[in-house]
Length: 322
Image 1 (tube, rainbow, N blue to C red):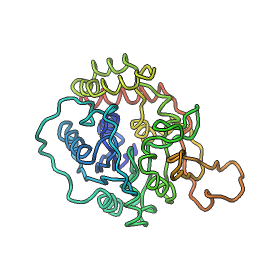
Image 2: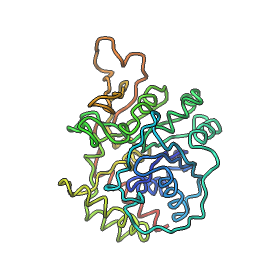
Image 3: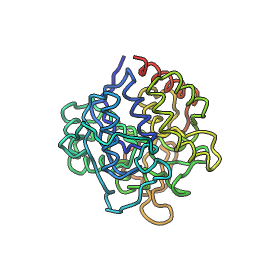
Image 4: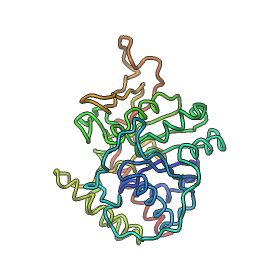
């Protein structure tokens, strides 16, 4: 069995927390670090949430606090109507958390770990790409030392999905479009798991109830934090919650469940399509343009939904029951 050494770059976040548990309980994963970024909540909150999850679920890896603003310095209010004011669905959290963050900023933690374990580290990034871009700016050589990068981000038009924060853009990319374009421009093995598959995979309420019943305290926690999240999705007619961040984890541990298309990716900067992700299909010829001399990466275009949902369910239940 191949075990992946993983740095999880995240902005917990309800679905981030669900994906962290997926990583933690996967026998195919050695979680060597958690790095935080602003997004679903401000950086102080996302870092506190990561430390809380580490402490509550006995996750032994370090947590390093990352970027508080995108590369262009733009400050936006977090989406409290989706993730709650505390980032975890407004469930009750302890006032005091004993776990402390690593002394290094997230980008330096990433650099140090990649250099310490050359060609072994997989980065699963499910928030804005700011920490990854800062790491690349400080140490461009790490692109050649990373084993794999899997991001939850983007929307490429498959199954009619182009954006969620705007008609053109997915939230993680829109939140730091410059960072995303720099990350897509790096020559490391990268796969984008975007709305094309995450909006096609829903956890319905009976599924979550079953998980609650069979996964003990872990299942109860997932049930509690998803109450606000489920109401948000129901408010515009969806019958369940979209599985965003855990889809990126699933690609890492079971890539055979996904279909991909390969080609270089650009991110639109500014204007009404700010944050749009556009891939030039390697299988097609175009006139010279902005995609030339950029590395080709994979974009997920389809997923075996039921197999993925079963994988998540089985991993959580098995891990929660020891």
